[in-house]
Length: 468
Image (tube, rainbow, N blue to C red; front, side):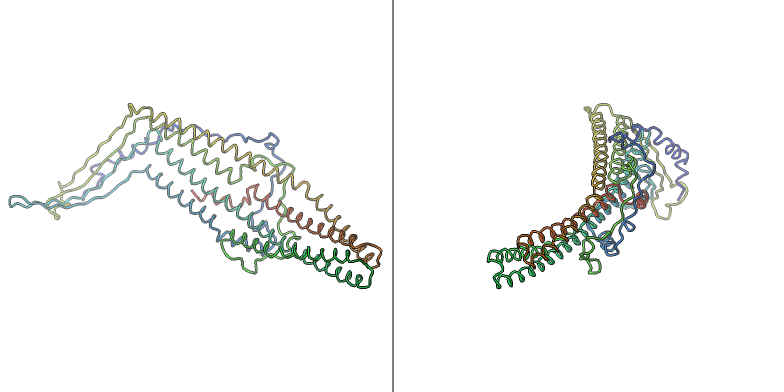
């Protein structure tokens, strides 16, 4: 078979490729100024040190639970598949920038009036390659690429949220286990007080009303303790839904985890610059969507201009298979075609206006995303600013409640105080213990929230570049 370049000079195709995309009608993109208070734009002396999630958590069981969630969670799996879907869409669109070549072969045999004829042919064809003078195809490809990068950032956002939610659910379970332990301790204390009251009532030292009050306190403690098994079961179910699998016993939390520091405190300077907010994956995804809309405007504008396509083919044909590759059997064709829009009822102009409106919507969405990020960081910092003082005050209150109960028990045994004073001291201690557990949980959840709202660990941000 004769070489196709014999029929289609390579200079023609090379010149066509060089001319393609020589004009870009997309508006220039500049990152918008963050729509946040001016104080957030000032850069502090040092930027926050946000570790990756394995370094964020100190407890091995919590690390194991998070790792299991990252392997099995269905939302994260869907997000990863959406990245693959966007990658395939980008490759499909980007392929339009290159010529499409195809080979075809055929054989026919026909007869009429006693004569039989046959024809064998083989052809290499270039099918309608658009010379992208005005960048329509190039902008469509750029838009698809930005969609791919946005999908990768969305997947990272889902991962960070999953890490934070898994850790929060694990700690909530631990806190409820501690609350259950405290409720059981309170019940045992009330039962000891009831036994003492019954002995004193039998001796005539207290009235039946005092005995009834002690019995009521025990029944109230029983009712409170009885509610925790269901709560803990719900905590397990909530965590396992995030995990997407059953939680192994080795990864289950313990009651003392509620009062332990199982996560690091994110190191923050005096202020948080807007550049930190712009590292968040949801902000980056919104920015990629905005850039994609700029490219869509370029594609819509290019559609108003003439389009030129090339069609070429080279092949050979013969009446017999043996003569298919003989000299003189070759043929070729080359034909450019042009399409010039004259009247379309304003459809192309409307497409440009639609693309520009979509760009404005994406810009507003980007601004809103940055503002939401700023609010979330500001809220987390506001909570953090008071947690240390609140914890110190609550620990002092707990120590005072413990002293009060010891004095009340001593005086009650000596008969110098009433049953109501003892019950009040027991309730005060129970309330102080429960409040401390809740406050310690809030302090740990605040650390996890800071990890989440600052965009998680930045060490895995480079994985987004691999999406290209």
